[in-house]
Amino acid sequence: MITVKFGGTSLADAQRIRHAADIIRANPDRRFVVVSAPGKRFPEDTKITDHLIRFQASGDPRDFQPVEERFEEIIRELDISLDLSADYDEMKNEPHNADYMASCGEYLSARIMAAYLGWPFVDTEFCVFFDEKGRLDRRRTNNTLQEKLGSLEHAVLPGYYGAMPDGQVHTFSRGGSDISGALVAAAMGADTYENWTDVDGMLTADPRIVPTATTIPAITYAELEEMAYQGATVLHEEAVRPAWDAGIPIHIRNTFRPEADGTWIRSENIVRDNPVTGVAGRKGFSILHIEKEKMNAMVGYVRKTLSCLERHHVAFEHMATGLSSFSLVVSTASLADCRETLEWEIQQEVDPDALTISDGFAMIAVVGCGMIDRPGIAGKLFSALGDIGANVRMIDQGGSQMSIVLGVTEDCYEDSVQAIYDRFFINMNVL
Ligand code: ADP
Ligand code: ASP
Ligand code: MG
Image (cartoon, rainbow, N blue to C red):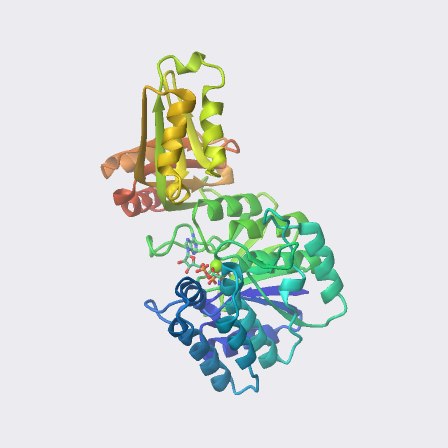
């Protein structure tokens, strides 16, 4: 049995939905289908989820118009009889929380796919559950999915959302339909979780930066999770665990090139000549730097600083400590509502000699389970970046030794990714 998930680009219009349905029907083992909201049809297009988020913010019915029009066009072109007018009215006219509104694209998309395939629609609002803090309740979700799907031959489910204990709709973070698909696959004990997207699989680097990046034929769950976490957004990082725990292989495939082999994700160690499996990265980081003379001897100094971050729910990604200073890397977005207060609280709490928060950093991760016992990787990295004049502001070798993360300024992010890629995948013998 195969659980499949189709992403937004794969379902952006009627023709693509028809094509996805052909893929589903081509193998009778594809019994459970999880869908995203329609995404972009062309580069300048707007995803349905972004229209909905905009409508929630503005409350202007004109912002809902493109949503209704897109779904109505799809229904017309698919030539199915499905009346969603009561749903649109409820979405437009009733007061709702932001998560409810963001989830509507998946709901409507699944209703359409279910009608087109002639399969039952099962709403994840009643099978995916979060606790009062918004954390996924995996046990309850697993049991309920088994209960609701166990007697069904087929079903179509919307991705991306579930419900809070009080019944309010709650979404995962963006791209979260991948998680829903993994949860369904895990609950149903699928033989494979097929994740259909718009690229040939997990590539050795972000194809928007390195157009010549190649497909990774096989990758371990741990490597994939790390790549996804570090910015290779082809699969949501939280989609890896449910499949990994249940021992279900994930197969990332291209809807627009179903003949391509895709990427297989399994747990067994994969033997490769190249110690590096892929390069991933993200922009949008800030470095919080604190100086305090003889800080190394002050027990609890860092803890007190971190407690200030904790109060504002600011998580840190990396930390570097020294004799009389330390730095924390945090996402710039997490400082949006608390920057001044946080600075003031840190001043009060630990009385630093200097405190700065600098924005505009990107983190680049070199990932590979084969790096553990290979000397010289960091040397090659520095040399690649030195050659293009990029200044490395931070380095962190993850505890698992499966990744090395470098911080550079955002203006040299793309060039740095390309330079690292060239050194590890093209000119591999250059030191
Ligand atoms: P979907 O809508 O199918 O969920 P996403 O847009 O979430 O698809 O993810 C696919 C996109 O991820 C690709 O189009 C590509 O631009 C981007 N991407 C970033 N890094 C990588 C990578 N290492 N390999 C493949 N795709 C990547
Ligand atoms: N539609 C949601 C988003 O755009 C979830 C998803 O596509 O996975 O983020
Ligand atoms: Mg996605």
